[in-house]
Length: 256
Image (cartoon, rainbow, N blue to C red):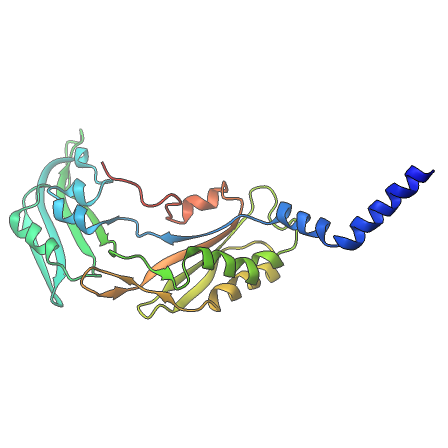
């Protein structure tokens, strides 16, 4: 009997001294995974990759040269000192004039490519085809939360993640909030890309993004500041929604 009384006293002591232990443990078990990642343009390369480019496939790794039987023209368009210039060549190898144009293109502007060609097929009456694509050059310095990545994670945890009820993100559910950091480091265009299926949780996440303090904007080496897109994802990061976001969770993929 005495042993039973001692055990009851010990349990009562634990309950009084650590009243929130169970609650804290449950919160840790049910806290959803969350990340903030850059949203990349469909075709983007670094300034170094741009300077080394010799062919169209160097500009766009998805370019299919095997589709081409014969080139009619390859037009590259870019802006230099605010003036748009076009340079035309006869095949997928960049001419010296085209290289000069893309090397001196204004920071923060895209490079446009228009390929006119005869396709490689077995048709008797072959018609000319066209391939168009736009290349974005990544800023030298990505936009960053003023307090750093760890401070950003802590801010989101306090303002949103800790307030999400347990069980919202079951199975493969994932919420995504896209937003842009403008040239002043301000958050603009925040919107729900993928809903949590809970209106209050969506509002919680959206408010946390809109109420963030300013970031350090993305910049090129010459100091030009540009907008950059990001996305907050919350929930199961194995969801197929991840494939629709144009993000690189382990950093941008290395080009061969």
